Length: 423
Image (tube, rainbow, N blue to C red):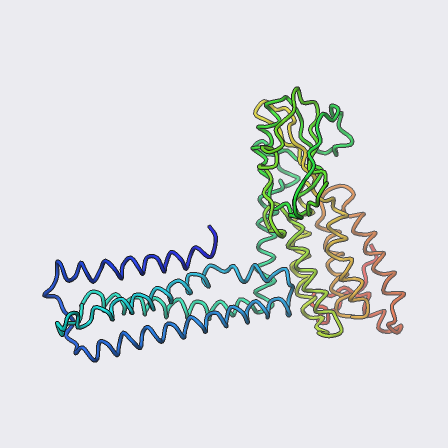
């Protein structure tokens, strides 16, 4: 649902009620009136209308400040995430509805010099006013979600949800139609390429793949679809999207492209790299000389280590999707374990080389990953990265005593030292 429709639905409902409810009252319940003087009722409704109009302006200002704060303090890629909060749009809709309905009710006070005040309409205005205040309180409470700990936790939760949905654990049998194979597309004996789908249009990012639709298209022509572009990739004019192999006839490109949802930016759907990317963005921004906040980088590494620890216990090989008959129909690429390590740690290592706190926390994360990675070769890859980190520390501008301190892993950064591991 488009977010701008939410306040418009509130406004439309308010207009309909404003036109219908007072007339129904006058037609069927003329004896039910509010025991309030006309002047007091007019003052009450006028104050409600003007107050809600001012409160709507305050909400807009709060939304603007929230977006600006998230862009400056954390990452510009978080702007849309905060700006698309449903509570904000429901609040705007409720405020506008209260304002409009109060004006409609005001028009029926002392209608035709009757010196009466409609009972149900005035009560409905009061109810809408109470609901608006509750939504405003909820919106103010949402501001606490901008605290760095809450933001990091929210991003980590999105990443954990994506890992749980996308990958199977190494010690479990695959379920359903999706199977993460042990071979890459290059290692499989695939039929020849019969069709190549190329993107045409403005730059767009792949937000999600409909694997069921792609499998159905491939099954119709006894083909195998190999995705060249992955979720999170930006498609440019002329980019190769997919290759069709072994098809008996040409597949309709329009239907193939309809199975790919494109957007203006990356999303958390089917993209476990994206939450890591956001956490790294927050960490390296905190390490910039303008901010100089290594503790935030350490907190980001807490979430990064947890995500990598979960990824290390899952099958990360290219996804081989089969149809109901067990035939391979779709190949979807995902990053390797080494890709995740580079994404998570390279930039933090580069920008935090002069911070003892960051180096100690980074080393603690790598030591922990050598113990939790269960797939063959992953622990060795982490150890190679750990040796690289030690080399960076040795060549850093830190003095000899600080280098010794930086080589001790510490999950708090600077809190509880642990001796350098000899393993």
